[in-house]
Image 1 (tube, rainbow, N blue to C red):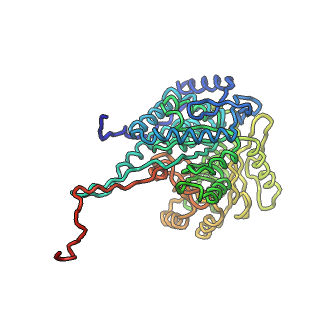
Image 2: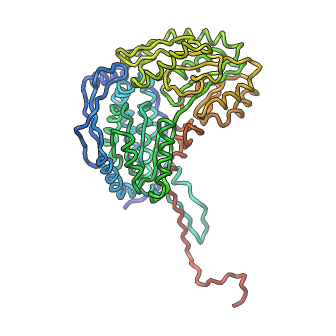
Length: 543
């Protein structure tokens, strides 16, 4: 077999297309949107080489037009999950032994398919399934996913290149083995890139995977599956099942060959997963890897020295892009009294200028939240704020689910820094602001740190470097991704590795080498060239 020390193409971040009027990319994505809107697709489960359809199906609709059916998908029974596990373990025999450069080539090809022929389709699917406007779809489904695939390949080579010291008579090596067993990937609705990366990152390192996408993301997950298949991911390497998350997870966590879980979703579910794995620990052949990114109650803190327009823009973009349905979305803000009139005026102006409706209309900044459950939860918190004496609705506060699940971008102002919406993760276009006395900057930083159980993202705005240093130190453990003079969202693969601690997850930093290291089990190999033939050491003296 030919050999070489192969160098992969240098990873670069995919440029974001503009989708300006009359641009070719705008025409392409609108054409794809219209076509896919009317197709009514059928999505089977993918297990080994089979496409499996059952008599138990669910329909898919768009959040911004919930009566319009765009397709159906098939739900698993326990036997299908067992079959997916068997397929993964069988595929592992060959996949784990495949030369790394061939695994790399598959996922590099997937990146180029997304950058080229699949770009319009995966963006349109994300617009339909998750109600993202075109810019949010482009930076997620296209650019971030391409970046994950390219950079993961580069990170893999860096890991393999990390080798111990040797000398003339001993050659020391470390090989990075795939985990012994199979990996379970559980993915969320809100990012198509995350949905693809969680199974793909483990697979790239030689593992085989059982993947359960979110029920609210199956439509765009189908495009991911199509891309992986065209790129050459072999049958059984990534097996896809849909359905009851409790049944699927229980079946997987009861299996002795379960080797790890790659999860993005709610904090409560992740804690239950942790508990289940702990209760089953004597079942497993190896200690499972548990990697999770969960919730957030992300903050913006402004110092009196900050630029008010920059603060207002950080709040608006950080809180309302993709309807606040990002783990990193700004959800609470702390503004000094001296700055509040200017920030307040800008917030009201900006929010009132936002248009809301279908993502097919490129003039809409805001579209719908993901489903009725989310809508009802958000509406209840807004209604409560209207009643409470220690809160007021500054702007927004209306909602309507007659056609789609539309919640107006809403700014709540509270006099109580521990008000419910300052502490509770809402996952929608609602931000709560607490106005603090300028002189209480240090006390406010302590308040920020202690208010939430989460520690995912946070941002400070300041032109005073002493204040910046103080905030950076005081909030050391309050956010895994910390931003200075910027909104707390928009982490870029290879630039801002993403993840948080406390109740926000295991902080294994997607978009970096650290995450990929969780999907390998190193083995040290020492080879001695001239092997001793006498047990006696020199200190023993003469024979």
